[in-house]
Length: 368
Image (tube, rainbow, N blue to C red; front, side, top):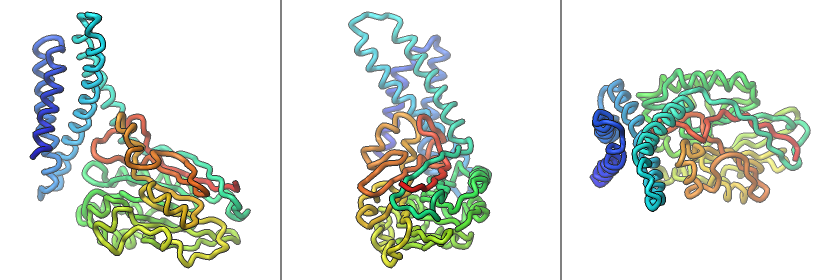
């Protein structure tokens, strides 16, 4: 209830600060109507998920998530405008409140259009070279195609995932890694939309680790479904891949929050590598959250592939990810460990991306 009151008050604040500055009463009333619709649609999007009609629930999610994106963008721009007006007040710039209100609305509309286009297009391929100390010649140039944080659910369906699968297959990678947050919903609702994963092709197969959203969506059912599709789920365990006369260890851990839902799934990089051959030419860990890096380094991994952050997804939230995770995006070094954090291949919540482009990552390992 508190959240609903806060949402209403913030919408009132935006309307109070912006509507009077718009040219003409028609524009002011239209803006007020948009604010009223937004304050209504956002909670309906969450409560509508309980609807027995999936089509109706998805329509509510689409409208509510677009409203949430517009609301958050307008809120930030309105706050910035008020800061500017506060500092400009002693200068007595009479026209500043009027044209700045129009600028807020115009900027929000532009950011929404760009953000929606960026979120809904198929993620572009990002090429990343990772130097690994002592890498055997047989593993030189080994490639992993990483996809992460797709969030198949109310606004992301089978065609969106199919385009991603087609792009990954075009890379002809040695292995494919799916680093969590694949779904937002139950198997019974989303199984047909996740089915394209069975088409993924690579030399050594497709490997998956759970993200936090799998635990909100019925993790045991999803693990069984992914295995049925031919995807190998790594739950605090590893496989040994033989490649060109050398071997490498590919391990995976459950999400760092997994033990809150299932104590048997407690994330454990050390357990994931236990029993691995000591002469392996490279040790790679798949871990949904970058915060697994410290434990991965202690366990002796060379590389960790993560996601979770979305790179912040859209401004200004891109500025705050570091408060929750050690890395926001890209390749970083922790002791002997390389950590690569994907910005994600889909999106969550508002269908927006601005300042944090989605990606399909092709990681190529070379001697360092």
